[in-house]
Image (cartoon, rainbow, N blue to C red; front, side, top):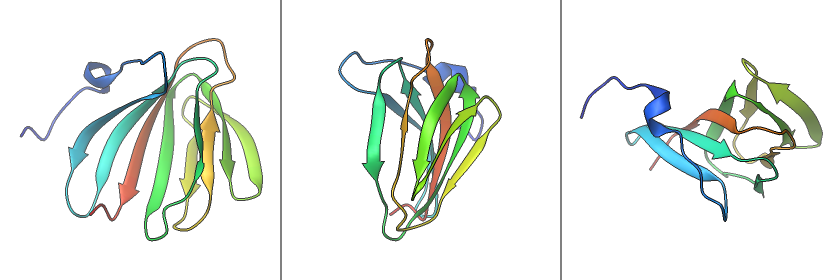
Length: 106
């Protein structure tokens, strides 16, 4: 396994639901991309024992974390602590690409 990659090699789409690609994974951390076409969503969910972050690489999305909702664009970072419901919807007119990390990953 290489310790280097370019996120562009992992961008993709699926017509029926958002696209996910794992870039790196160990027992302690998983890093991946979530790609959402306009209108697609990652439903609100939570991870009881895992913290998660999103970094918006391309586009913008409407993120929900707990009771807070905010539109976040390129360069924005979103933090979802363990046990807090979170999700995202692409309400824009172009693909939303999010770099995502979750830990621990077992």
